[in-house]
Length: 158
Image 1 (cartoon, rainbow, N blue to C red):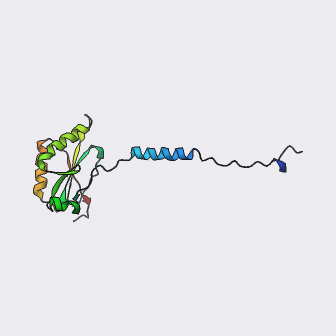
Image 2: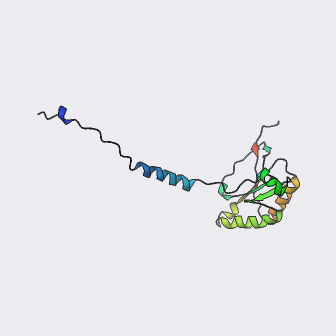
Image 3: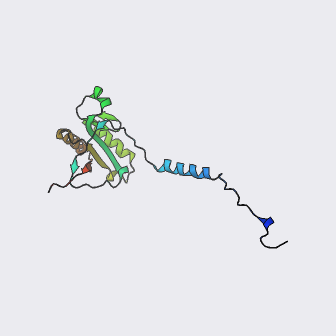
């Protein structure tokens, strides 16, 4: 009988338990479900954003309210036609509905963040400027003066 490392004294490596593996997977799943923001609104208008020479990224997307302007997608053209429409949230509206939309968006923000709220106009590059001017006039009437226009970075034409 030897004290050290005899052939009779071989120890096997224990099998790896997978009982905590499912807990870790569900914890990760829960984490990503809580932290991921899902798209809230369905895109009902076709928008090809115009090019811009200088583009600035929106700092806080949670403080932005989106106004989409463009012609309806194919599934809505039978009902709404092909003329440019204004989409607020998930429905087509007129310029008179913008005031209620801005009021509802302000109410959904905290008191400190209301002054920082930005209106993001996503308009198709072929939309008549008259519609955009009407939207801007209505935004002025409801004191929503912080406006951004959605655009894609284009080549410089120097």
